Image 1 (tube, rainbow, N blue to C red):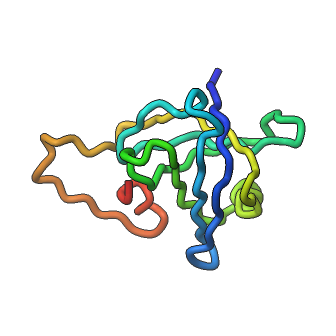
Image 2: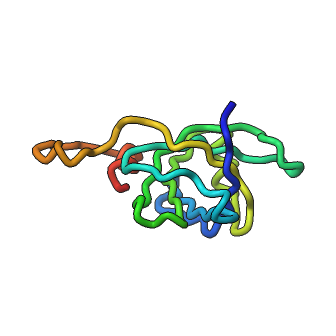
Length: 126
């Protein structure tokens, strides 16, 4: 069973016709995701009006882990979930679980070259 932390939408910004960025902030310090590393992802839960989970999907974190109070997710429109997420507005509450994943840059990887394209760049932005 996943633990979902409650986050408020601070801003929902269209970047292109089919990509938007959600700026999210934890409802409280005690209700914040554990520290994450660049390249990790979270499970995003869109909630029903009664607070239950409507559905959830994984998205890469594109914000810096140094900004602990704020999480940014870059999302490309694809199906029902992303179209509903695109309609989220300032003040709406969603759930985040995680962080997950091992696609992280470690200091010993100083000679590494990473290539990314399209929405896949989100993980590299972090």
